[in-house]
Image 1: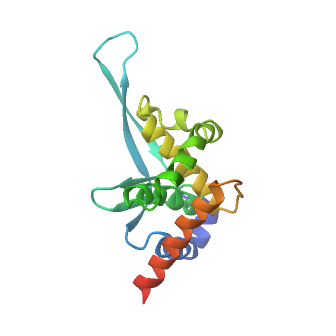
Image 2: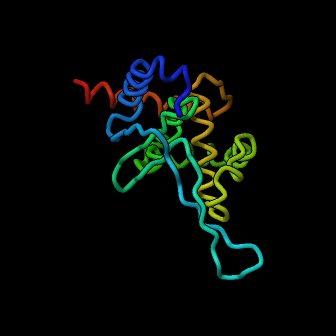
Length: 173
């Protein structure tokens, strides 16, 4: 079930997340759910060609084809989840120049280690592009949560933030 803190402040928490969603990803349909699960298929140990299917609870997910982000309200920090999922849309929208993407991708391996991406996203094993994007998304979530990044990382993340703020202002009128 939900934590006592959540139950006592549900309306305030949902309102805060909704406001944040309008600021950072107004073009995306953000949905809040009690719980989210992802089906994981991994090779069954010792039996070639057989997959082990399991479900894992997740904090959020994005469906690019439908332009939907789902956020689990059971997760301890739904705002960070929303920011993380929104960063995937930044790549889809071509928001960053080739140089900015190279700078972020150069740090992606480090962020994958720092944020334990390869373990958390075992279902993406072997897909270096997807794993790197998860590392970048985690780092952007940390940035939007107040962490400072040096070098050319800060301007790239700031550009994403400014773009989304302008888009949100435009859509709100």
